[in-house]
Image (tube, rainbow, N blue to C red; front, side, top):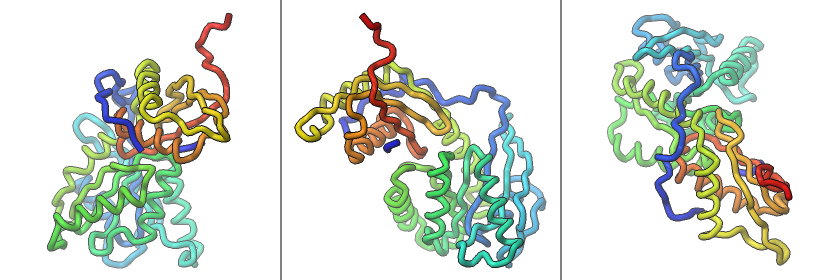
Length: 294
């Protein structure tokens, strides 16, 4: 599987919106992050009641705790998880079980909200946790807690956006929500961001649109020749969602450079409306299966 850029075209009108199959489907959210970033306080704020144990001591939440929340006629299943420490610091058996519990909660989630501390944003472990979400193919929202303590919010927001897009190339454009779980400032922006990225994660594009896009992309920026021979990209289709997955049928697919595959993924994300979600691209060496054989 392989994961800069043709001129931008407007394709969204022809692309199917990313709505779930069942409007009553429960949207499952895992709230994860380093210890003591305010995960339980955030869940309590969303629920409007003191459902989780909170306090200044890191590690009060030992297990993943799930609670149903209804917002604007949609049900959300919130999982507040134990903080995910570096493996070297996971010494107690109880903490080992808590980290495993957090990973399981993420595995069963549709959207993972990675909560980071605005006072110490994007430490190495924050990025490792976010990268794990993307590698697992989940939709990602970054929530920056304790935003009310920041003196230069505009400058920091721009810095965080740049660092996020640079560090997580597989999720460029992922939602970034600044909030204070303690005061409630900005919390109202979180669920709309979750719902929006969930729709993108479920988005499906018609085969006709994909192949028009592929043809124009190849015309402007053809694949490089490898050992003097051109690689022909013949046909493209979407083979799945959650995350969006695509297959391209070509000659000598194994020879296509990784850089060109990334170029295609970046173009898909930008032109066809997939900001902020991981994209899977499968290259297959066979003919277009929909062509009539003579």
